[in-house]
Image 1 (spheres, rainbow, N blue to C red):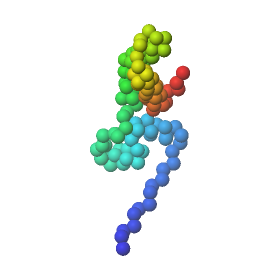
Image 2: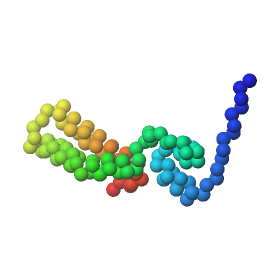
Image 3: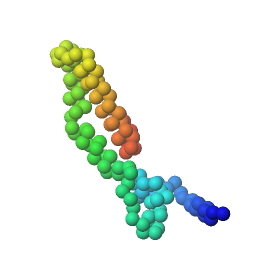
Image 4: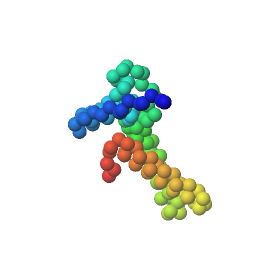
Length: 115
């Protein structure tokens, strides 16, 4: 017969306490974060990027000018000022869509509402 696993520990927190704990954990699962804090275990590298890393990626995307440059190229193609074949046009449109998705995901991860 195998040894019975101990029952899970339940802890009631106020909404403010829970929010504070989640901020402290910075994306790490709460159970692992609490155990590491209580028992001094070394925290493993977070599987998820920190809010700071996400914010930095969003800032770099915004400063890069890639989005507006691709958008300008797409507009020039539509106006006939930049003759390209349909395959290249489709690639540029797909790149624009990808950049929009990346921006949206980064903003969602940071809790920022899009305009």
